[in-house]
Image 1 (cartoon, rainbow, N blue to C red):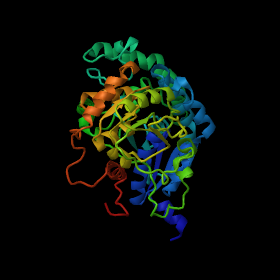
Image 2 (image 1 turned 135 degrees about the vertical axis):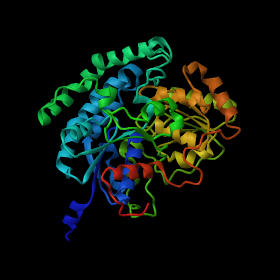
Image 3 (image 1 turned 90 degrees about the horizontal axis):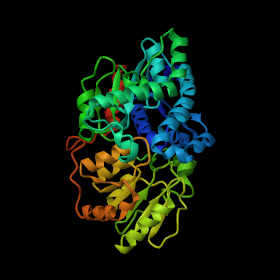
Image 4 (image 1 turned 90 degrees about the vertical axis):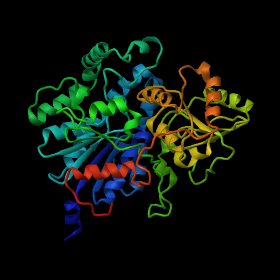
Length: 457
């Protein structure tokens, strides 16, 4: 059998990761495990993260160029609670839609392909609906986008108009809010290109309330978080409803996207692995692990940081003789302050166990890493799922939700107090298990094709 014939006979996985590194890392982790199982894996990403995909021997498809990506994430409105969601849908999801659909059209092998969709990937859902026999796994990185009328995920600040949006216990009000959000905003933001393709490909009538349940796959829905982290979401969605498959919570993926330097990928440059947007001038190999149990501060891989806020953190911590490490991948030069060390992208799995705690934006990747390291966290959310993660961190006694910057001093005092002993964190997986969430996800995804793995579990 020729190599080309062997490749055509391999099962194919087409994955999407239209976001920053917090979106890319878990999808790449799943792709790596599918690759171990014999799948040929293709991942659609923004250009700054193509090198990361290729560093693991996977196929990268650039659907958003670096200039466009940087233009989007550098806008201040992108990081605001009311305007951020609109820009994500209109400037990320919509730009991703047609190019990713084209990639699927080009690569799809009937009977040998599975689609693995990020929550902002509507192209895979359209292709699955209009292509008989196609199998789709919807992957949810955080619980915030799954609706609940009694205990809705928090998507806005807890003050001002945000307080009146989706209050807990107001099921009738929340049902109406979801209805109006669909008809007034969400369907208008993403419905036109989506429904045009559904009509062109299969003559289907327009789909209304896209984000209600339609967007989740009828085949498989995977949550990359443990059920204890969102018990009300798991209780509602784990049984299925006939429209979407039951939710399966597999645990936090806990993957920093770091290439093993002892592997065949060791010759890949760090800039290429991290992506220019994530790297700046900081090499992961060149960064020494922190000493003195510092407080780590980050605003995520795509945000350019808030220097005035970090300076204030440094002032407060200096009075308590606590060193500060500012991790800002898109601006690693950072600030100059007596007790502040500035770094670029670092593997949180290695760093956080050596830290007193972390102040961060509330991205699910950073949140889960702090939970796994059993260190307290202060969450200062800006937009997207960050408010929901902040609320869950506080609800489970894992840290503090910083609602207003004026409360920073008592928040840091509480974090330092909490750091004196390891946090009590529920078990993510059964004790003694060495199977990661990405491995569990790959196994479930492979089952959609009834595919026996080429490599052992």
